[in-house]
Length: 258
Image (cartoon, rainbow, N blue to C red; front, side):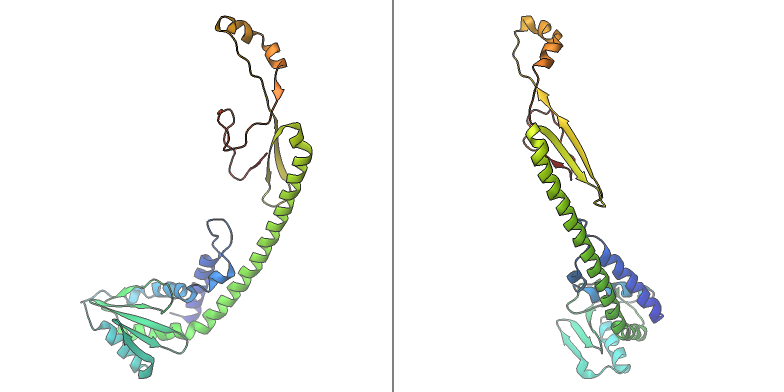
């Protein structure tokens, strides 16, 4: 794979992963860029090696053959260790862990969460070359990471500025509603526009009357609609969660209610 092409692939992938908003709608914080960053890049790079994952006869010594291929390419013996059914090979910029499997091997990066794809009858020389290529890309990958971190940091600052403006608007609206509208027993809902340029209000004046009527006089009472209307008095309806009459529908999510 061409190194520039590979860098573009991992860069694009990292932008997609780290710029994707969280479930709350906020951009992932800068510190999240450090968490398993190399593992995510490696996972994306490994997907480009699918053509090397040649299915073949199970080879329980496949991991050893890959380590041997790395040694033939100049990896020093002291940079290779074996523990718990896996080899750790320390290259110039990054270490790899090669896990032994009954039918081949898997490759991961110690301390990083990443997709560990299985290899079976792979071309060990070509895999060793791919590991060397990724190792040589690490300085550029870390440079890309710094670029992404800076972009996210700037976006975080912009997002925080917008949140502060929004909080100021909400506090101002709260104060004005409490001062001028609530004393009039009005039901008020408001929503701040996404760009913080306007506030949408819904103001409702609610009235009610309570009375008891003998059955024999029910028709007579209800026919006197003017009298019922004259007896209506303003009242403040219950807030969402306290409604037991069923007269007031649930308030839409994100709307402030008074």
